[in-house]
Image (cartoon, rainbow, N blue to C red; front, top):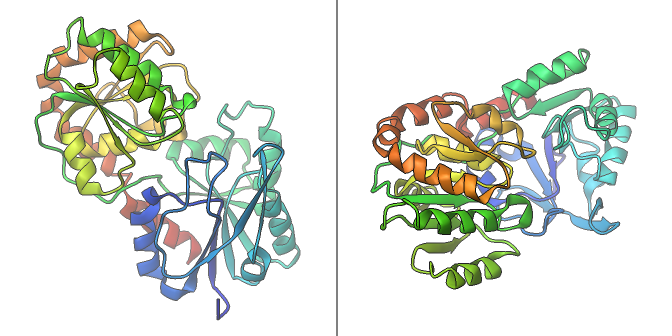
Length: 355
């Protein structure tokens, strides 16, 4: 890598859902931006899959059963001299602590980026560690406006910017058959996809239309057992597994076939994505949701009792009884979500912060 970088973005790994955002940031910053990223995240199903014009690949060395990480292979050589570094605010990345401290000693600007608080919330005991990292940076990019308010009240001396978290550019509301159910996310235990398959099986026998199909978009360690479960339940023809899909046009077609999306475990970016298309979501009421949950409201979402297969099955049947109501609300749901959350808004806010 030649030439001293002006803006450096440091990440553990960058999934393909960030492609639209990075395309726009790169268009605005050009060769001023250097992206430093490792190949794989703490959760192994998240791998770097973006194409970036100016990128340097780091080595991720996981420790303590993938609970801690040190990034090597040029981190300091590339990031230390930059005018500004934006790095993933994750206390488990030990090399980030060293980089923050070194840049602080040199009087150089470092911005933490990510979730302001641990997954379990601001009252979590581990937030004390995250707070130290936030204050060492002195500046934070957070994903939602609610987190900006909460963090400002908690740490009034911190400079806080909102970079609204989104996966895709502005899209038109979906049109389509709107006869199915869609899930988009990792097929791993923390997302509880098995609960959804079981609930769909119950709902299919107690009130869902016979042409209703459950589409599972994503991949992960549970895919094989979920496909086998669908076979055992006699629903192989009504539950389809597409694997990972990042193309917006392909996703729009799939969401257009769905009346409603589902989050049987914790909700995050999948909520933003679903609402951007104008498709409401059924959400578990007691899970450690990501900050994007602030988008959920009575006009675009329905909650069910978490970890209760009967409650989720009943919610699926009930929402199909409201089918026409949800179809008529499609445009309003989409426009409201995208007014603040789109990859264009995200890129514009990021560029404004780094200057």
